[in-house]
Length: 205
Image (tube, rainbow, N blue to C red; front, side, top):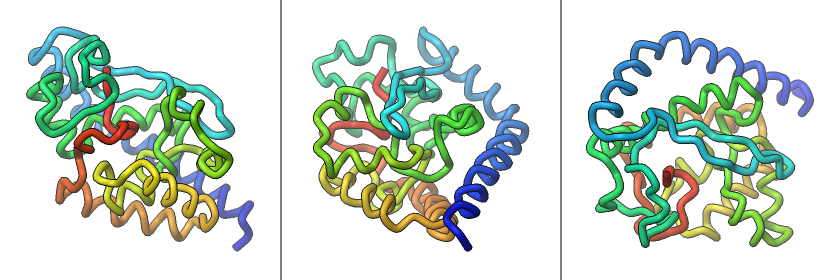
């Protein structure tokens, strides 16, 4: 199977899954939105600039899991399991990655894919070397190789290494394998918090 056809399959899968997901999960979105509004003041959605394929800036969507103006806290962009900024509802959403569901909109728009390196914050990209910038050669994903192999418990260099390996060895079959393994990781709630490692998987906002 040619790489061009595999890329076509990847994009087609992204569109089909995101459309079906948004349709089926609409009632869940409403319940989560109501719970967020009842739990703490602030918007339902968290939006933040991230860096996508080839360095293009886009706005990522997540359900808000923290109090407003969370980055003004001394922890800044870092978070851990006992982070006081995480709301009660937010803690539950993070535990099962439900805060990531609105990223179906990003996938449908073509900003993201189901599988790929997690979208990076601009200030992190400014510090990239040539090796690290290779992770920007593919669309960012909701899940990826780093998320099924340690998730937020990985160090920053370890995440980069896994992301670049994915870029170098990408195939449609690898995407399907990562998606399948992601289900188990989410159900086991592995590596939800990063205990002080610069955060680019969980939101801060």
